[in-house]
Amino acid sequence: MRRLSTLALAALLLPITAAHAQADPPERIERVVQTGEGLIVSEVTRYAPLPAGAARHAAACDYITYLRYRLADGPEDPQEADAVIIGQPAALMAGYSLDGLARNLEHQLRDNGKRAEFWAVHPRNICMFDRTGLRAANAAGDYHVAWDYYFEGKEIDGKKFGGFKADWDMPEVSDMALAQTVRDQYTIMSQDLPDPVFRKNRAFCLGTSDGGLWQAAFAAWDFDGDPGHAQCRALITPEAVPTVDPAGLQRLPVAREIFGAVATVTYSVYLALFHLGVNLPGGDRLALFPTTPTLGFMFSPRWWTLVSIAGIAATYQPDEETDLNKLAMRDIFLNISLRVNFPNNWADILLGTNGIDTFHFTNRAFLGELVGNTAVNIPYPPYSLGVLDGGPVVPKEAPLPGNILPAIPVLGKYLATITGTTNRVGPTDHNALYTWRRFNELDGLPYADPSKHFVDIDYFARQVGSPLGWANPYMALQWTVADQIMIWFGARNLDLSGVKHVDEANAMPSLTMWSKDSLEGALLSPLFPNNTEFVEGPVHYDIGSAAPVQNNGKPDPFSSRITGYITDLVDAAPGPNQGTGTPPAFGSSNPPNLLPLGVTGSADDGRGTGSGGH
Image (cartoon, rainbow, N blue to C red; front, side, top):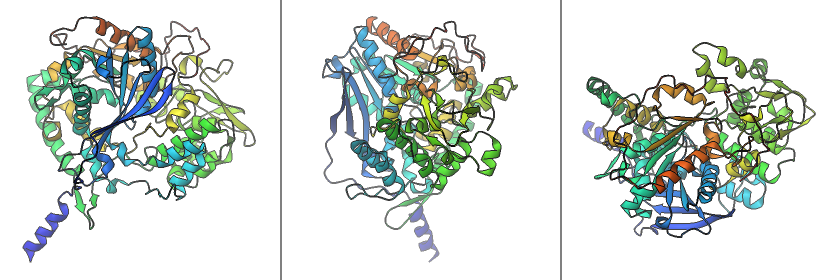
């Protein structure tokens, strides 16, 4: 009897996998989803089932998807293009978050005489998010359709939203962390760019923020004898650290052995926890360790969904008064988020007074209040897209005034990554209808600096409200707390056993760029390669949404520099091994051209009108 009980317990703890259908679906489907501005955007879906040992998962998770941007008058075959850029988005983002960068690069490369394509890759776990409500709301031009579907239980064409998933409901997410991400990119590149010579000479691997770290891992990975660094002409990593060994530990024998041994054991424990679970009747599995950063505050899928719904509202009824501020406060999780992120001071946070539902906003202004770095108290993700207008405002004091952080020794730059250093303002008049000043309409406002705003909120509304996939709210926590950290310290076991070509990856041609105002950059600068370039312009998440012409009358500096870099490499004869021969030096603790927090350092404060669109 004891043996039977032991076997029963063992059966509960074993992973359950989904049986594959007897007849596999079409291997590849491509459908056009947008046209205009001389571009064709199509969604490419490829059938690529998760490994047999993966936890039970929805059928949609057996597909990988990317958005293909190309010139309307360009070649149909991507291998006839001058360059193909493979783009990985930031953490918690999906492929369409790179739409602005993709469009800017397509147009600028065309102006340089190059016919390029940009492939914005969706993380596989975007399959966890139901986009039915976003599609229906856009089709109807009415954001209430999405709100009612996600938060009020209303059906769309007979389909009812299954609810926002909790950690314990998603053990399969841990099967879609770093190892699966790099394999998915290899599948896309090897299948849709089958000529290895083309990949080596004309494919460019780009990633912003965490996407840059994924590309660095991809370059160092071994795909059954085919190294990742041989798939790309160069690495392009805006606001990212472009290596899996930024501290150089793997180049020091003693450090490599010590840190590697500790990281190997630690990583083994991490993975055991992430895959720990109990099987339930009916084939489901209960995770016993957090699998995604789905906290009720800020990272909640509810929050990302609210931002997308606000984007739809700002797209179709930008100047009408919103009711989303009142609707959102009826949801307990959104209520907590908004009670922390909106109030002007600590008294209102603690007492629950002067909440966002007690003021009046246009739909455009409400979107700005959710993600604008001049509005929200803890801006994540923060966007530089204008300021509140239409009524009196006061500087925000909660959680800390942004303009005092640069003066705080040591801790100031760390606190700034939470609140930002921007002067944030909030409303005070409960009768006024608050509006929003776009990024190129800020002249004359004493509390706004036009040189620090880079994104047109009207374009941004269309981007975040699109059903094409802006956010990835069910990102694998395994990547954040296990893969990312342990790969830097030298773990090369289990899911990280594919990392075999670190030196060759470091020797690849690469372009690493950071904004001089980057808060993340102020923290990570000791890990930058010495050839890192710094620009005055969009900061972190802004990069994927930046207006093509900025307020100084110049093109977006990130896409402009990347365009020049790709053009030069395409025009140059490729070397035999694509490498520089010598890995760049890492570990410059104080790059001379990375400005301290709060210092603008702008040598050109001329401001143009900005184009405000794509």
